[in-house]
Length: 399
Image 1 (cartoon, rainbow, N blue to C red):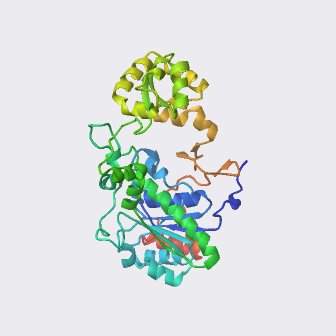
Image 2 (cartoon, rainbow, N blue to C red):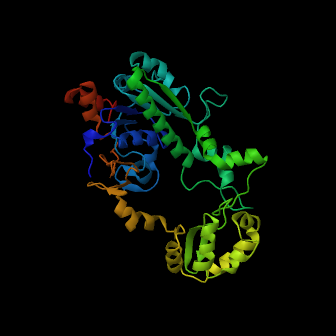
Image 3 (cartoon, helix red, strand yellow):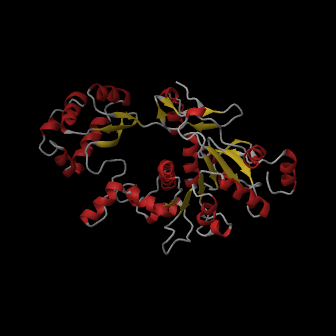
């Protein structure tokens, strides 16, 4: 099944994306995936900071930029120029959603704050993303994912026992904040259908970081001290984690005692490991982890990954290879799912994760060139003609 672009859930919703880098653009990208018309406002010369991050993919884009800017159009406008600022304010007046991540107070100083814009557009859903609570003592601190991973306890969850704290491999706090923001925007749009009124939404990276600690966070509160770090192992279930076969790593997740018996008897050919009272139940194995894991490691090293995975799957025990990143993205599983999309003019993106009625939401637009839709947007949204657009371009107001 292929989607009719006019039949997506947010078709007709206008989003003005004034955000940069990751969390805010991720929010706007989600809205674009669901069909919203997302106009990304960028500085006319340098564009979004992430156009200079990662690996060059097309002449003006990078892998980092492309990861959070599919299904958008770009307009290059100088907000420091009064004419440019007036253009953006005019677009805000007929937008349904505005996403911004200016430093606290920055949008208000430009006349782009919630109070000013909602006075003219009462139905506006206004989403602000910042590092810390807007009404707190740290409201003016800039927010950076890595800093917040450290401050929120997220880094304390990662890494091996006795080793240093580790960050996530990706900017997880930024990404979760963007996802939370998109959820809040969609909820506000749903409510607006009943009330006709917009809402102000505030997301803080620190809040999202704390939420990410999830059951680990609550565990540490309940027991009165930080939980132990287990690296790739599970804190409560044994064996459950990344293990080494004779020719490479694989994931094995033995979720209950029934699976454990099959694991010992039918996979490892070691029924004695079931009979051993130290390892008979998951609680026993967790208690005696230090004695159990070396025995298990020695047994797994006797097998190839292929043979182990075949035996594990035959016994109904969840498992899988640990692949390289490129291998995963180019593999049959990703290809069959349609997760990698390449543009006719170059560039590649990961497709939206969402499926509706059995079909994946489409990549309607590849990540835009800087200012690539400026004239189109000015004409469509503000009614400016070619001569007026050229005059603005000549003065450096737009790209």
